[in-house]
Image (cartoon, rainbow, N blue to C red; front, side):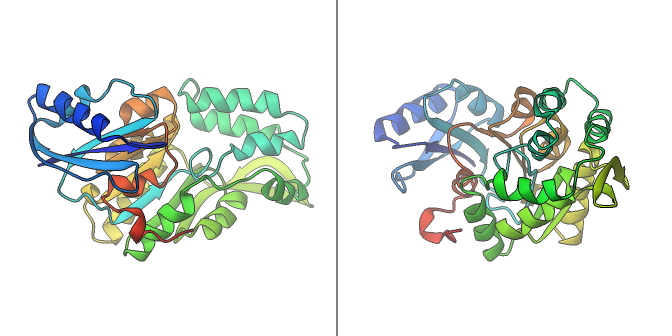
Amino acid sequence: MLIATLIAADQLEKGELSSVADRLAEAGGQITRMGDVVDGKAADIFFDGELAAARDALSIECAGIDFIVQHAENREKKLLISDMDSTMITVECIDELAGYAGIKDQIAEITERAMLGELDFEEALRGRVALLAGLELSAIDRCLDEKVEIMPGAKTLVQTMATRGAKTVLVSGGFTRFADPVAKSIGFASAEANILAEADGHLTGKLDGPVVDAQRKAELLRQSARSAGLSLDQCMAVGDGANDIPMIALAGMGVAYRAKPKASAAADAAIKHNDLSALLYIQGIFSRDWVKG
């Protein structure tokens, strides 16, 4: 059995639900049950059919509505692994940190190209970090206080899943100086990111240890699932950039959140209109059961 979930940014009308059911039927789906509109904005349609055909049928943009089609089995996930920058927080930390060095525009351009998959991730990262050499460490604390904002719905998502027994992992191609406090604030059980080298109260322009790149993110997903005794089908991975594609493609539910085109194309679901609480609706968890973060 398959489930199509509709999540409206505002209000979901019954007519919109019926229209989607018709599109699924035209694609060969046999509707078995129509769910009620919950919280005024989300509903499920249960049907039998072909996953690819159903996703194609719902691939047409509809203003303010996100569509997700998945198998009913293992719908509620037991592991959440997520990117940080522009996913769990609203900014790219390295860009904001560069602002304190007066070079934000220069670094942001490189970041954008790396996230689009136009540049080698590690080379681009090391090059940007080198440009920060000599920056006082106090700029990191200022950046955390002044620029870093938690993405709407992030705390509700992570804390609700954790309360229901899921393992939660934050993994970032950014830096531990940001990832550790962000993970603690949101409620992640663990975090992994790159380590900025420091000396005499300043950044050296180098990294300590191996880079957390796309392959490391995917490997951390595998390791986390293995240690929890879970199959990959029981895992959800969330990200927005090209360096998130391997883990998004690997997870049972790979989610592209307000993502770059390549990441969206690789994902099982692309959330464009809603906040991160949409990832709870995907799992059939409605607001009456949420932990309000």
